[in-house]
Amino acid sequence: VGADGMATPHGGPTNLAAVAKLVGKGKVPIAFGHQSLSPIVTMPLQWRIELDDFFEKMFQSKILEPNDAAISELSAPHLIQNVLRESECPVVILTTGPVTNLAVALEADPSLVRKIQAVFMMGSAYGVPGTSNVYNWQMTFNGVRGSCSEAPGQIYTGLDPPLVEHGKKFLARPGCRGVDMSKHGNTEWNVFMDVRAWRAVYGLLAESNVSVYVLASNATLDMPITLKGIEDHAHNLHDEKMRIFMVELAKAFLGAGEAKWWDAQCAVMMEQVISGQPGGVCSNWAWNKKTAVSLVWRSNLLEHELNPYGSIVDDLNAHAPPVNYCLGGNSTQMWEVFWPMLDK
Image (cartoon, rainbow, N blue to C red; front, top):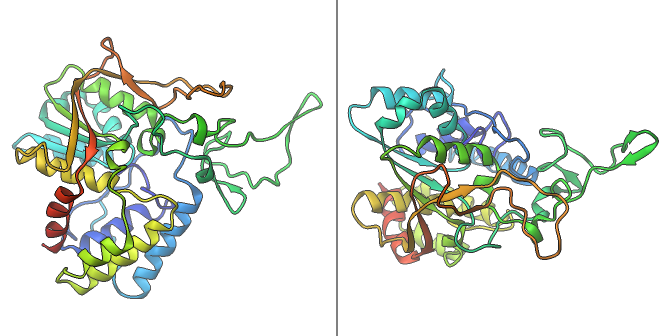
């Protein structure tokens, strides 16, 4: 998970450590991640605030216990490097969120690629142009522009004095640096958060024998999350705290404006591919595609044009490995793996 996850900077790793403790994995090392290598955008401010609020409620109700004992003194890229160096067998890597930490780890020591067996990544709108899940409404929260701003890390309230140069006034551009992402986006949040890192990982794996699997966002379109569906399955979990946690998490997640299985589906895809069932939760595959990741940003677009930034397209000359893209979902297969695993 890149940097802070969806949380504010203090929260991501420690929140994750608390969840790990809930599922009996409290001693698995967790590290603070690297910030984006291409900081155009952060997770929407609304999501970050609401996630903080959700975890505070879980702590107050004693469903989760604060846990920072598992936080490593190493940064996430260094922890990844250590795992690769010390492992006696080839390593499988699952990336959720941006792939920043993996990019930083491999850029610092490209020789470690030889220790990787496969990489599973969730992200992109590959295969169906225009299926971007980055929207304009995500860029503001109560009038505060806290996701995509002219200067990364800054927040524009909409009330700030305009920039002034040579007697002319320049206001912060609406949308994302002047782009209506709902209309012109052709990407997905995990890629959009760090397009350079995504491209770097492809390049660093280009000359290797590493198998690469990517779950595109359109693979989740026919697998919506519903509160009733979560409640029905959570009811069968043996652990009471886990039952409560999953239902409350679903309520919070559904309140974010859009909810799909995304990263969790990618984890199930990984489990099934490794166990020899690639036709499981992924109902449609595009195999061995040579693809390029676009770093080009354009702010002035015609009505029908899509912003190339963060798009992934077929390109036989791309410096990238052959990638297997999951383009469709099978919810029945998802339930057969996901819920029994939680119950363990």
